[in-house]
Length: 171
Ligand SMILES: CC(C)(COP(=O)(O)OP(=O)(O)OC[C@H]1O[C@@H](n2cnc3c(N)ncnc32)[C@H](O)[C@@H]1OP(=O)(O)O)[C@@H](O)C(=O)NCCC(=O)NCCS
Image (tube, rainbow, N blue to C red; front, side, top):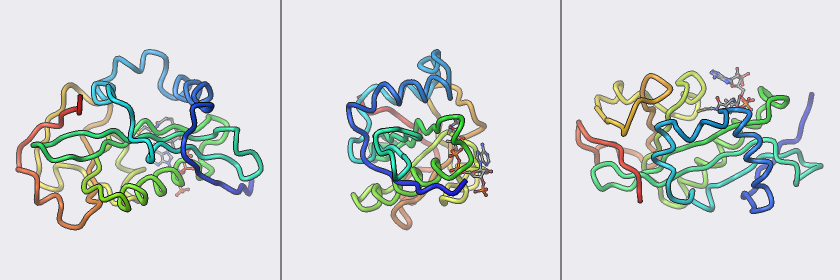
């Protein structure tokens, strides 16, 4: 299926559709997962995006958010949740959201982005396994995936981090 994928900022009126997509992707008990301990504040507004088909902007197909987090008092961002309506998965709606979200994050001067996710999916966006960057970063609890992934949005910014540190939420 050839689709014209677009992204735009998330609106209040998208909320019900986004909840449905997240419930389907992660289940209603998703709030018990460690990542939600990092999502107590509001997501960063201009990095809160949805993807849709060009001919139907009000029908949300994919959703992405980023939250502010701290490592050693350095402000970083945490990607997620990212989810796409089941029927439309594998058609590019997720990748477009990650690509646009990271572009905007770079534009607004963000330096380091973390994600708890599948390396095979995120490696195309310059995400690395923390251990491959010689870093040890503990989290507030166990993550669904083996380890955190990290992407340097600004060159050499990982040099700002100590070798051992902890990922903390912004409260
Ligand atoms: C993961 C998810 C967001 C990806 O979005 P999507 O729109 O389905 O994926 P896209 O069409 O943008 O990307 C498809 C590509 O990613 C690959 N891909 C998708 N999920 C993958 C995974 N878990 N691991 C590795 N590759 C994956 C596909 O093989 C495809 O590769 P190609 O472009 O080389 O053909 C979506 O499938 C989803 O909502 N899944 C359930 C929720 C979830 O797991 N969210 C991510 C948590 S971090």
